[in-house]
Amino acid sequence: MRLRTLAQERVLTTLITGVNAPQQIAVDSSNIYGADDILCCADPGTIMRANLDGTGVTTLIPGQGQPEGVAVDASHLYWSDTSIFQANLVGTNPHTLITGLNFGPAGLAVGPQ
Image 1 (cartoon, rainbow, N blue to C red):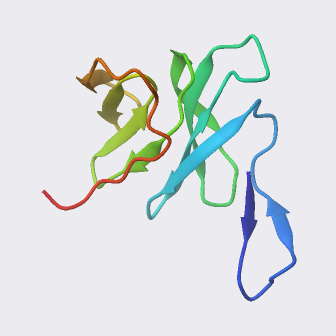
Image 2: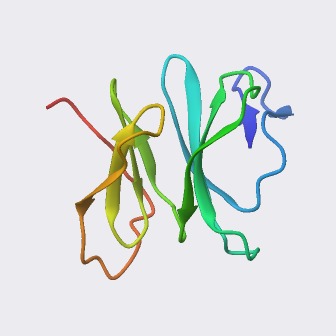
């Protein structure tokens, strides 16, 4: 995963290495959350978290099919595959919110409740 700032228009900084097929990311005040898909590899997809500087990469939710969209709010992490899932920000209590999708939404967003 790379970060590009407007002030450094042509400078890319690699934040996280060693992912198979990184998909979308979501950011809160402390962490970067991302989906690592299995498109290019035999490994199952994962939902992971890292510090904002790219250190402390942790797998939160292993064994996902092809996770794509990722979103975060103050207390939960959301991701999509052929369903939409939710877990606490530390990866505990993962569960399905919406099932029966024949596709994986490529983007998720959360707003105020």
